[in-house]
Length: 428
Image (cartoon, rainbow, N blue to C red):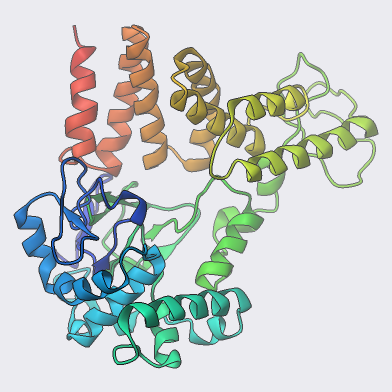
């Protein structure tokens, strides 16, 4: 890879990287390959009876690290090792066999080693939640690895602090890429391989000017900043986070006049507000109801963090009607859960309706060339095709193609094996 390029075109892959270590989530261990994450028929490792592989090649490829890990997993069987404990154990085992010399290249000559990652040692030491988490992991690791292989607590804390994984792997080279809530690049995966692609034209390959988002962009500035501070120990000062009107825009109320679609940016305890477009006055009772509906929605969304319930979403919608603006963040989040819940239940007409309402807000908050927005368009194309709306399906799939060609590339399996066959079905 060249370090100096005149211009980087949108969609260019600027970094490809294999993980320093990776771990398949324990809940998938009997249905996916532990090495490449492929689903399908998998065979159990006869040594530990814990991990599964799709073929002999993957087992051989994984053996250099798994042969050390294997007896430890067998020793604590049938217990399931927490994902965080297993990835930490694999880092420890790899470092003890010379992994500290491994280089993650981000250009032909520039690289990062494990010790180059930030340890956040002092921040973690004063963070009670992180200390408690590390102490609980330490007990699991001691059972798994035994006293002989366990690093002392100070060393363990340094390893733990560098363990901020992407997906379920730890990658060295990408650690050179900083965060922004207005990213110009995205990270995607093909199995365990990570790809960073430019989503905007860049004047050159200057790593100090390339940014990905570390967090879900469909959050308020306060929530994004809190997550970044808690996990990465920095305060984001990107253009979106320092925009004083960002939160107001994301949490807009509907105009009290049902004939007007203008968003109203309510200020706390400010009387005499009115719509800037139609002049409709915003009564105090409306402001009070707006805050009640917002708080109710937040509470319901928090309760549905793991499982979305369509009936709960519909209750939220009934309360939000004519109170929250259609582009309000909390309304958009409710639509997202209702959309996914409808798909899970096979309610395709509902999914179609919610998806149509979701698209504008999802695009606004995530950006035009965001992998999640591309996947939403792909899902909408599938739904329309299932409902035999071929023309509409093709429009969504062409939009998905435009986005995923940039975020994933034409050689990605998602593009080649899912999107292209669907597009072909709509070409007649």
